[in-house]
Image: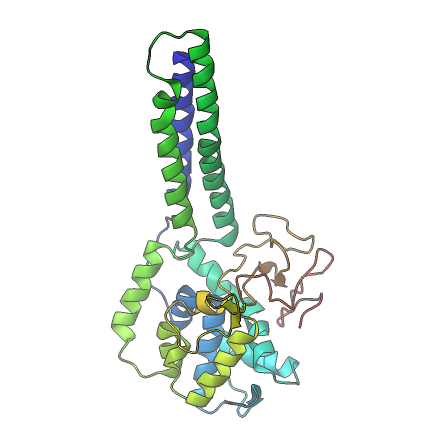
Length: 342
């Protein structure tokens, strides 16, 4: 039993060290400042916030017009940056001009996906595939520690049945390492659940402190979300478009109620909009190859898939849009799903 105790401590300490090292490694990077309002928007709310930032900027100076019921019209087809050009490009390819479809299409566009790739390369966010793998490590560690506790009780009973002499029970001997493994798993899982790293949060704070005094509509949305949209009509339309793919929320009695009309800096969570993307160069034409596979439905754009970054609720590509395992990834500039997309 003493040899088994030593073995449990050695294996437990090694597992704890591996998980901690994995979490630290995946959330480290060169860091540095953010370059523009779109990177701020991505850090604050994912691809959806990036699209809302571009829409607010385009509408503010009259290049597009958004009216009820969520219809977008081009006034001057001029884009000053890749994201604005992506909006105009997707709008040209969507003759119906529905705002929620437009937002969904632009979220999938390479111009938006590459923002996430760049932030991940600098250690400001963590790639979704990396986060999923790290979460599995934490889960395995926690479940193993939980499962070994009843096993240790059984071994304690067997030990005392074989030799009734008084001694410290086996379960008491191994309890410290099992407890340490369980706590490590919980803490590491909570850290891994956050896509934005500490360096990313510091970069956003520094950018907001330096540029927060500006009255630019796009910047206000990037920093503060939909509640900061200056135009009340546009704000109402963007909120409705965000709710379109957002998951229904339940009240205390189990009934469904709409998403709130007041937003915080975590709009992506409150509305269930896209905060996840596949920041890699692999395609998902086979349903999830390489290092950035898309679980469930996923949209694909120019070699990278926007798992969940196209829709609400943390779901993949929207409740009504998916790239199935037989779908192909379009690498064209429109970057649309060639499977069933709404």
